[in-house]
Amino acid sequence: MQAFQIRVQQEKIKCRGSVILDCPTRWNSTYSMLNTALKFKPAFDRMALEDNLYDAYFNEKEGGKKKREGPPLYSDWENTRRIVKFLKTFHDATLQFSSSLKVTSNICYNLICQIEQSLGSLSTSNDSLLSFMAIKMKEKFNKYWDGCFKINKLLIIASVLDPRGKMKFATHCFEKLYGKDNAKCVEMKEMIKNLLIKLYESYNAQYKPSGSGSASGSASGSTSESQNLTSGSGSGSHFWDLDDDDDVMIEDPFSEFSKAVAVSEDSPELSNELDLYLMEKTEKIAKSNLGTKFDILLWWRVNSANYPILSSIARDVLAIPVSTVASESAFSTGGRILDQYRSSLTPDMVEALVLLQNWLRTSLFVDTTTDLNKLVEDNEFMDQLAEGIFCKILILIYFLSIINII
Image (cartoon, rainbow, N blue to C red):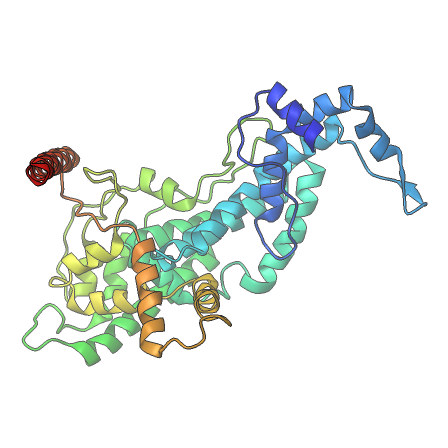
């Protein structure tokens, strides 16, 4: 390790930590191991040229049977580069799935479609290594998802409740996966529309506000109205170029949809707030003055007066976590708070500690309408004010000390 660190310094490799090993219980560990190893490749190459003990280690027979595998050759590094490129899609998806400080249900279907497209594209690749991996993974994917037909449809409803995509995004995904006017595509669209209508009618009967005209109509007209909402770019096959240097090999459906979407400005007669929501233009994907991302919960809170029934649906559907990481983390937190040395805490104190930890870790909520320059000016003013008060206190202490001496 000392010799390796010397080579890292000689090659001026700027990377935190050192190489890491694969962990069989963590999905992203293989990607992290290989991706980190690529950054240290020059150090490994220098070790092979300069360090005799490095070569001697691999020539030793392991367990008296055969010599150890290694050192890594040029072909191994090339395979690693391609595999890292292949695994990055799953690495990014895992990070977003396991997030616990933001809504995940509305992005789930987008990531699943991206993974399905990636596996389908790579399974026909000319690269035998990646093609073999993709075919095996596609079999496992179909076992649990069956081309998204086994998916919990509420995850698709969650993407429809995202005002940046609505039903147009779901239609775009169906057409990319199955082809425009394909029987599966038509079946999926009808299935989601009918489920959305039933969901709306159920909530309308339960939460119908008194005197509300927008929610009084039946949702039966949604099917015919939403027929005009379906727009997509066709099935379009994608093929990954494994020789380029792009980190992401295939664009996720939501990014592709947001670039190509064209919303009709026609406003047919609407019967309820579901029709109104689906027929209105999608929200533009733009950052605020502070550079913060789109806050879907804030959007529904602001527009809850316009969509009282749909906001109730969004409140319940968007609260669904798509990963068990958050709940497992909660149990891990309890184990860190209550141990053999802190076993006499009252339930109220444990609750207070858990909530305080959550509040401290949660990023400060910032109003998206606030100007960044105004915040900087306010902070500078408060700093100057604090410095002035501090100086006055020092002067006062100085004079008091002189008086005491006298």
